[in-house]
Length: 140
Image 1 (cartoon, rainbow, N blue to C red):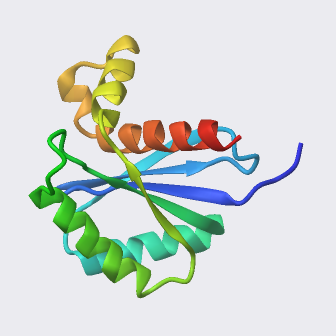
Image 2: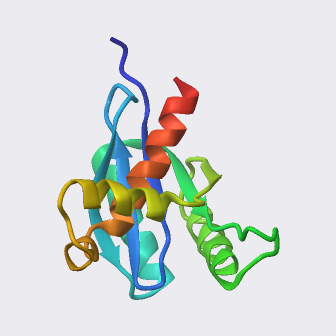
């Protein structure tokens, strides 16, 4: 098996930001502890540390597209964060649709016996892992 560049998935949130990282073979997405939201500047600093620690070579950033095709408030906040982060790093950031990733993650966690209260602290990173796993599967 050949080692691949590691990818970081970010599920941006106004309260918590979910994080997932690919394995060294580029086959499995693993959720990481979420990052509590303070400011975009703090979030960028935390992301930069993750990039360094895991030698990340690419980022996928979930873009919350509305079903009616119009831009929502959250999409504007994600694009604002993207602008700030891309000015601080030199690795590529790719937008990916994050539609239904939280719903899928909640279903998977429910199947594992996690109730809504237990899911609250892990759902964001679980959604990032769903997003990243879909990305990895479509590129392998």
